[in-house]
Image (cartoon, rainbow, N blue to C red; front, side):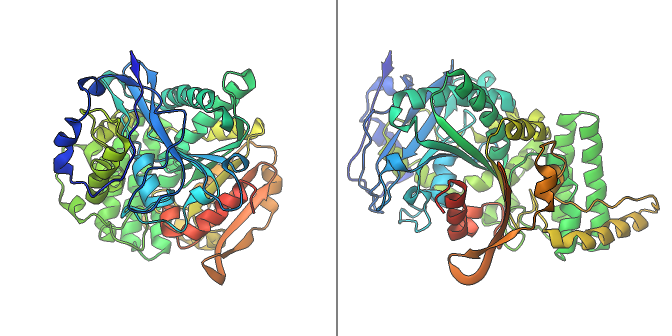
Length: 496
């Protein structure tokens, strides 16, 4: 039997210790049912932040024992109805990061973590669909361990089930331009999902107006990010000559494993490379090189193996204590349909572990296929991001000097200079027919809406491909540069 449920009303401050009392109010079947859709009608619950936008949420069973959670905010614009604005699906990284939690309350949702209105919320210019993906992420959950997704192909298959259900149930969105925006590992998943969605739309199995995908600080070609960590840190005065050699040597070991298609080993060596960076930079923040890791307790956590270490770097920061308490307290009470045995973020590390063999596999070929199919593809990256670094075009001469220096220190006189770095490496080896023209274009400066007269970003665009360099931002661009991220959203969705 499939049950539907909804809960709305005046919410008060909620303590996580009261969860047991809260669940006593619900029927005993709620912890084990297959929850599909909350309701066909949007609801507007009253919350401390005076949220006015309409919302809906629910679960879709994407496979037997695999339950995926989604949360929709209808666009709340003073000048246009939601039917006249695009629909944006947001995919978080990790894998194991929650869109309904981190993406929503830390980045682009209508309310921040303190339940106060966010001035740079994307809901003011688009309806936003958060999906806790892959299954086991956020409020999504699996019934048994062998149901976790193990690669992006399975992730894409699961998402297609959810999107088919979503657009079938909510026909008002079938003709609205639909965009997929993503961050970090979410970009890798977004590329695979976009390819499968393009096929499904062409076949008629999913009815939607798919308008494009945006890959934010995305793990598209992992090894090319790893190989540029040393030069990037050196250029920003975070490595000395000896540190540069050590980091580059660690990166070369990762590269060798990737070339031999030993992807699990490459993941382990990736962890080693990150440790070498931490030791040589006094613990640089991989997500923004100018800040320290905000969760002080992370540095003292004991780890059992390399996957635990990687999870400490890339999953736990998306589940800070304050957000964990919010999602398992006030928000859980508001939603009213989370099974009793499910904790937000409770399966996140297992999601991460299950995808370990997929971490270092590139999806550049998928981006090529999207471009060839005519899909609009946008890449955007933060200037201060390390984990998926992007160094501007003006850095090329400096990079040549770094490579030359590293070669001399290693006693190697046979060296080649590659002038592209970070994200630019994989972009500039696309087989897309428009690439030669794109590469010959000069970028255009964009004013920062928050600081008139100041440059907030640069961008280049040709045919169905665009690249945005977001200044003064790290990995989480909407958090670091909210107004610039919102402006970029409007440009990508053709509202500016």
